[in-house]
Length: 399
Image (cartoon, rainbow, N blue to C red; front, side, top):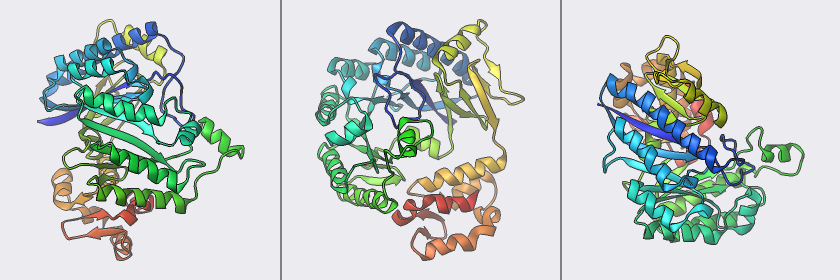
């Protein structure tokens, strides 16, 4: 039985952060939100109904991302879950995550989410430094973040993750480590650590081009990253992926499915899917998405080219992975994980031994082993902490 994950994209924000390039919008009203929820439920019925009939699939995770999905009313959240449950049974073992902005964390809302099935909350804290939050254009305070964790616990949500960012203009090493220490003190089960990137088209990128902002020096960025991971490990939060640490048995199952190259379906504007070896994405425009779903009066969706993959009428791009594409993506995502690549698992999945495919770069890779950036034990290989910092160079060998 094939495992499958589901992603739901809620693009609405109170205010769009100047560093973010995910599809989101801050000009919306409740009427538009209602229409979006109806369209998402309709898309779930169309697409999940087809895949439910094809073969048995076990639903392992549901992830509400954005945007700010914590702007959903509890009734809207419940309605979406009910439509998913009708296609793929939600059980007590299904991981159900929602991203949350601390400023939108109402206690009653969190309790209602929990009652409907939410069992994991990912809180976008980014920093516990007020000045850094101001630089990032965040709408919450450090106190809001602490209160959000407390409210979630009172609501019965035990599996809590925090997002933290480093490499932010004006952020000192001391400020960063204070945020890490504060996160540890809150006793959460999971942390995601992200180095700020100046993404094209964002206000931050324009500010850098105009000379108003500078990227953090690579040496400081690397020091922040490695120091945080060491401190977190001492606190019992162990790295399992380049950007993620957790207490034992609290890894994010939804994201692990991405890194294991497993199947997932995405719903909502700009949501991505990967199924039947086909990657496809919905249009990145809420109004266009709603209109496309409404046009499908027959509720049949559409097959994507000559593939067996079916998407909604909102799909605007798709590509079919060839064998080599799957291999490369598996290696890239596998090297993000702390366990790395296991030779037996690779051979079972792709029908060939790893170095039969990549023998041409074996000697170049072993040079990274010699300098401590990777470890190879005869059963597989993984990147070390030092190697994680230069992962792009190592991954480039396996294109």
